[in-house]
Length: 168
Image 1 (cartoon, one colour):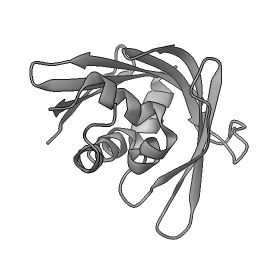
Image 2 (cartoon, helix red, strand yellow):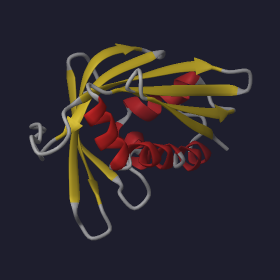
Image 3 (cartoon, rainbow, N blue to C red):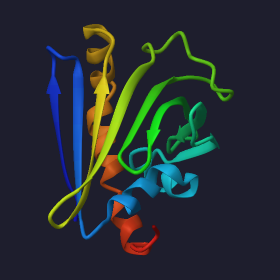
């Protein structure tokens, strides 16, 4: 079972989420991000599954997705891949948008997150560091549930690994 923890650093304007998976390899965790079908199975908290309408996993590359709520409400987002160093690091600009991936000016400004992958004594982990542009953005996104939503989404990975532990 995954060990998931998070820390907030108001001074640095960061949210860090660590997820450690016993018996998983770095390469297996990497595929959870690189492969659209796998990403859709865990990105988005329970009750708000994600559908990636575009997932161009490369630099420059763009992903467009929506999370659909239980009442059919859709919340769109986009990613721009800034760095991909397989299988150790992703650097992604992300934001809220519309179905075409255009930024939504009514929502908080885009941000950036880095995902670092590393082997552990018993498996592998990834660490997500979300960097916020301002204290206002930091507070807005935390109030919207980013920390808990991310931890809940990552919590779904165990089932995916159990279904297909050997996918490289």
